[in-house]
Image (cartoon, each protein chain N blue to C red):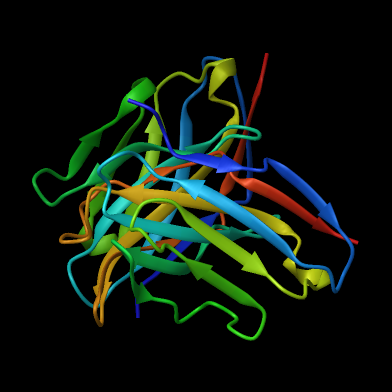
Length: 116
Length: 116
C-alpha cells in the first residue's frame, strides 16, 4: 500500500538559513510524488512534482526536492529561508487504485516557522 | 483563469444538524475531488468524480455523508446529521482528467466546519 511519512510536524529556521523538510514514501509501484504548500486559510498550492524524468526537481519560490529511490525519500529543500515561506507543507504520493486514478495520499504535514 | 470556488468559507452548526458545501471547479476540468482535512492531519480523499460519475467513494461515511455532481460541473457535499468529529476543513479540488496520476490537482480555499 502507498503511504507517506513526514518527519517533524514542526520545523523552525532562521531567516536566511537552509530549509529541509523530510518526506519518506512507501509504494509498491513507481511513485509520483508531490509537495504542496498551504498558507493560513488558503487551499493547497503545488510546489513541485516528481515525474520520473529527473531525480532533482525544481519548483516555485526557490524550492527543490530530490527523489532518492534507495532511501525512499523525497525531501524538500530551500537554500535560504524567507519570512514568506512560513506555511504548512504537505508531501503526497499519487497512484492508481482500482478504477480510480490520480488518487493522492498526503502526509500529516510539516509546519514551517521562519524566525527573523 | 478562475480557480476552484467553494462556499461557504466558514460554517458553525450544532451536532445532529445538517450542512451542505458547494464547489465549482475550474472550467473544463472533468475530475472533481472532495477532501476532509482534520486539524493536524493531511487531507483525506472522501470522494472522486469523473464528470458526473463516482470513481471512488471508499472513504466516504455513507451513513451521513452524500455528494453529487449532477451536471458534471459543480458539486455539493452534504452531511446529515453532523457529529462533533466532522469538524474539519472540507477541500474541493479539480483536475483536467484522471487519466494519469501526474495530473495536477487544483485546490479551492476550503470550508471550515465547526460542529458544537
